Amino acid sequence: MKRTDYITWDEYFMGIALLSAQRSKDSNTQVGACIVNCENKILSLGYNGMPIGCNDDDMPWERSGNPVDTKYMYVCHAELNAILNRSSGSLDGAKLYVTLFPCNECAKAIIQSGIREIVYLSDKYCGNDDNIASKKMFDIVGVKYRQYETTGRKLEIEL
Image 1 (cartoon, helix red, strand yellow):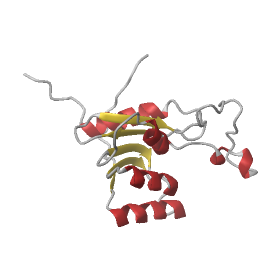
Image 2 (cartoon, rainbow, N blue to C red; image 1 turned 135 degrees about the vertical axis):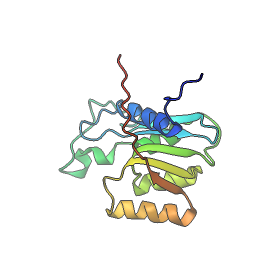
Image 3 (tube, rainbow, N blue to C red; image 1 turned 180 degrees about the vertical axis):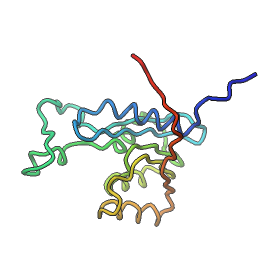
């Protein structure tokens, strides 16, 4: 008899996005992303962090102050990193699992890359201008988005 308590695809890919988020060096916000194709094969992963070649120890991580002295001018978001980390092929028709609803800048990259569906864990900035703009763009071009429905299942990884 086959096992029946296995995790769903949504649990699996959101779990991978959450695990990817743990690679972020940001002490306040860790975001992870996982892009999959229609066959449920992983195409790419990403997390929020500094661009390749920018030493994390030399870059600012502050959240306030002079804009050039904060993380916001430098950090690549998880969604953008996942799109850019794709080694080959197209993302047309792909699904993005992400732990935080995409900002308007990432929304543009998502649309341009051909991703057609987004499953997000948190909509922490719902109602902010960039969040409204993201949803407006997604609605205009037909990118579906839905909030991940938690199952209450606890998954642990001991290393």
